[in-house]
Image 1 (cartoon, rainbow, N blue to C red):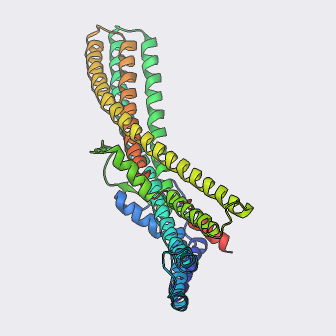
Image 2 (image 1 turned 180 degrees about the vertical axis):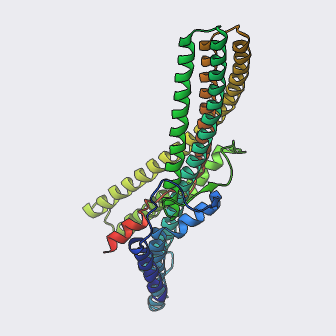
Image 3 (image 1 turned 30 degrees about the vertical axis):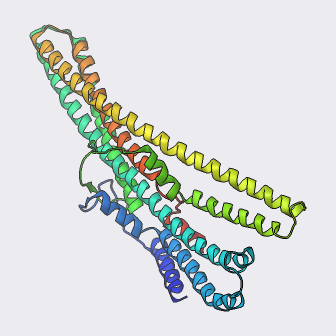
Length: 387
């Protein structure tokens, strides 16, 4: 009971912190401070700032308290049933099942907490790597701007020499404006990604974030799909819930049937409940297996796409170099070089997107083998609901 009270106070304090804190509003879009942030640190911060986890701990404490109280009461019950066979349905109904039910509630509360942690980690991972992706886009568009600026300088020089028409220079300047706008948009995407991540990890919206690392292809081996499916069956919270429901339905039918009531309506109703429980259990297992197999295919596909896109980027870079030399020598026209520039830019963007997709596909594959996810309300929503 003392632990429950402590957790309740902690939950209320966290809610008050979220709702009551007044902070200075930054009157610009410039991020404040300097904070190098690893993914692991981001997850740690998000877990500390989420009130849902405090509620999970409270639920676990309540379930543990109920289990402890039942253990005390069971001393008298065990004494009363000491002459009954522990394997008998009568003993199971009075002694074993009540204990199993409370233990199940305790385990379910722990699974809910783990599901909440999984959800927070997945959300942080998605946003953290979205930030890395946005930063990569800035790098790509900045390099593209340099290429376009070089082309613009080349066309201006050629106009001065009288080797190209004025229209070619105008086209080059239009491409330059487009490249500048694309870079500006990419820089704004970085700001949006930083703000979104700040909200997830409990920082001020305009706190500076410098992610530790860059968007790179991770080393990863898929391993056995059979083992992955087994992990899903062993860990998935919904499957565990249905396993317990199925066991209880089986017992209810056996307990009712021991009194020669197999032809009665209550027995037939219990039989129907058992059939439904079995169907639900099998359907959910099939769905979970399908999900993990689909995510397995996604990982293999995204990895293959990434490898091909790396080659495409390399080819586009070579083609651009050849086009640049040809344009400088007057062998090719501006439109030829611009096509090569666009192809190089698109190849860079496509590769960075495929790397992000590959990373998130791996995360989904791992997540599908775990306990599952729990819907997580923000600390603000939880505070509002407590009023």
